Each structure stands twice: as C-alpha cells, then as structure tokens.
Length: 328
Image (tube, rainbow, N blue to C red; front, side, top):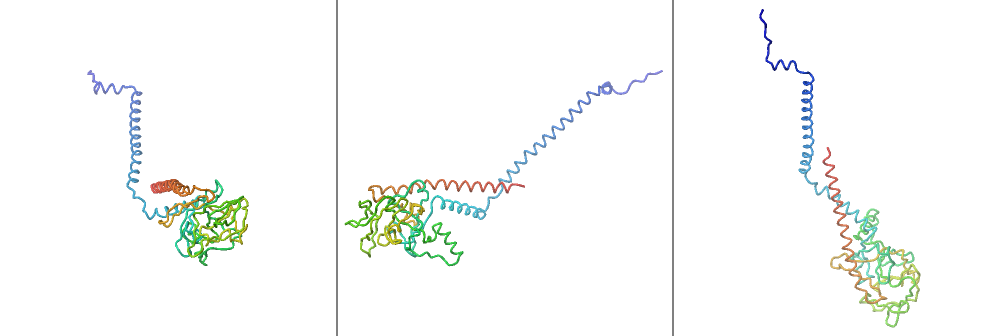
C-alpha cells in the first residue's frame, strides 16, 4: 500500500491551522485604518471650505458709492440732528440790530452763527455775552418779517432749513447782548451818554452808531433787575428793539433766563467772516481776548469725536453689509 503525501507547502498548513483570534485582530486593525483615512479626508474637506469662502470674499467687488451714499447721508443727518438738539445749533442773523458784531439785514445773506446750547447747563448768563433766546410774551415788536410760505409743506421744509441754518429763523428767535443780570440796577445815561450799572458807567466798545443817526442812545428810567431775568440791548444801539422799548420798557422788556437758548460762540458763514464772538464783560476791563480763543479751541476739540464716530459708523455698516452678502 502506498502512502499519499499531504498537498500544499508547510506555510499553507500553518495558516490553515492558525488561531482564529489572531485573524480577527488583523481584520479589526484594517477596519480601524480605513476609518482613520476617511476621517482625515473629511477633515481636509472642512479645512478647504473656509479657504474657498475667503477667496470668494476677497474676490467680491466693493459696494457701489451710490448704494453707500443714502446710508452716509442718513447717518450725517442723524448726527447733525443730535448735535443741533443737544450741543450746538446754527442760527441766521436776520436783522441789523447787532451790527457790526453780527451782520444781518432783510433780504441779504446774514451771518450764520454757532450757538452753544450746553454752556448754561453749567453756569448762568453773564453781562457782555451775546445770546439767542425765545421772544418773551411781553415783547410786542418784531425787527424782521419771517418769509414763511403759506403752503404747509413748504413752510415745514423752511422750518427744517432754519434748524440747520439754511433758512431765516422763526420771528420768535432773537439775538441780543446781555447788559445787566438779576440783582443789578441799570439806567441810562450819564453826562457822557453811557449806561450805568449800579451807578457806575460801563465801557461798551462794541456799540455801533448808524452813520445817518446821531451817536446818542435814548435814555430810560432806572430799573432793578429781578433774579432770573436779563436786561438786553442791541450793539446797533440806535436801531434795536430791545429791553428799552419792548412791551413799553421796564419789567416788560426783561428776558427770563429760562428763555435763553444758548450763547453765540462763532461766526461760521460766510467764510470771509470767520471769527469768534467776543463776550467781554462791559462792567469789567481787560477780558475781551478770552471770547475769541475759547470758541476755536472748543470747536476743534468737539470736531474730533464727531469725525471719529462718523468713521466708526461707516466701518460697522460696511462690515455688516459684507457679512450679509456672504451668507448662503
């Protein structure tokens, strides 16, 4: 009898007799490697997506100037409205009563002045200061006629323009210089035709005399100013309806402090008239120079925050618009 040799080499015989547990381990290792490769490919895809998005952002065209213009105009108007309401406002000088400190005349291009609305939140009006105030109810004379349209819509536009110094103001807005305040006694005149405060003459170097009139001011009876009231006069002394005449003079011609809108700081238009408005006290000598330096410095300091805020608002709006455009 012949013995038949087993088929295959020795390795095959070893594999056939190998432990099944070792085979399962190798299969598990292979599956794990496959999963790692899939995870790596997925991660690579995620990393590539922001890059593509950045490329799309980088390649996006800037927003058209005409699309940005309404936004910029709206922001500018909002800032101007806030400033005009709470900080400062531009007024038109419509009459000649403050010549030659402030130019104005019916039908001409009067001075545009910047009025500080904050100053009297921290102090009281003082003699020598030029102020804008609401006409008291006792004042019965107007120095100019407001050319408001009879059309309601046009009149509304004129009121908006007046708020920005682009149109004539309302007849109830008046500009004069403070001569005396509460507790002081004022009268006119001494033998040199000067106003007296508490019996002492004051130095009003700013007074203007109309060439066609005699350089003398009308006298008025002594009056003691009650607390909370002001006695005001125009620099164009012979062409001004002020505390001497309004309401018949006396107490009716006085202006309540609560009616004061603000202090005139600076002539802003026309450019040929750029200058500060002096606020030197006629009852005290040697302080005239202060009124001209302070407004310019204050204006420059106030301009920087406004410019910075405008740039910041523009940047924020632009970034917001870009983010909205990138969303799928």
